[in-house]
Image (cartoon, rainbow, N blue to C red):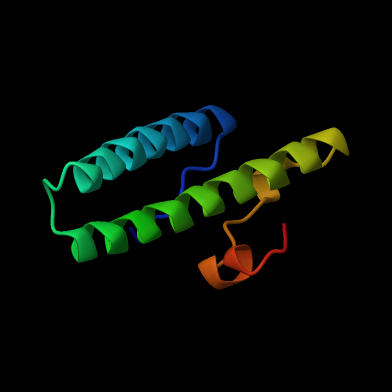
Length: 87
């Protein structure tokens, strides 16, 4: 999953919804043994990373809107940066 997430809020919500549905389906396939576990887990990890990047971009856009800045200036951050955040 190396495609760049879309930039508009509505597009982000649509993309997030699609990825959440794909994640649920993949988890179900793993649980039912319908897919190779190692390959499916690698796909799941990639999907989770892209979801994190989309959520991060959405948070950036909302913060910019809140402070009357241009949300279009928000940028997709590298997975290494997004994945290293502390909860």
